[in-house]
Image (tube, rainbow, N blue to C red):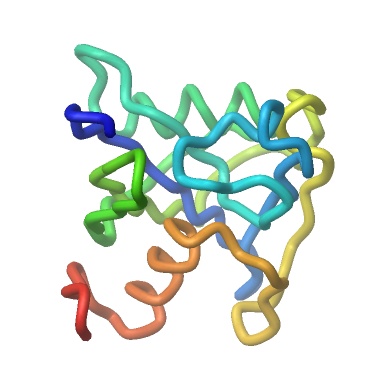
Amino acid sequence: MAEKIGVGFGVMVLKDNKVLLGKRHDDPEKADSLLEGAGKWTMPGGKLHFGETFEEGAIRETKEETGITLKKMKVICINNDIVEKAHFVTIGILCEDFEGEPQVLEPDEITEWKWFPLDKLPSPMYFPSEKVLKNYKEKKFYIRKND
């Protein structure tokens, strides 16, 4: 059982009411997630590095994963994501001002990127990304476990 809590973020890149999602590799060793993400659709994101602002982390990870350069963004939510072996505080970040088109830059982790209408999301979804989308749709900054 892990004893440390990590801080991560999911970046909701939005264009024409469509969100950018990537398909995590089916191999759990390659999907690189302590939160059980293999084979699931996810937003760009990752772990916050020491000394980074949320925005700096979002810019770094989105660029590394997709080639997209984020411009303006804002923190839209915070979630407490827990599974048996991991615990992350996930910061949801919304970006509608960016440059570039998504490319698969880390094919060992994410096998494809696609735009999905907010009312037609793919399944299965990576649950931290799914929660950020729920926050956005319900206009809530924080949703308690039983909400």
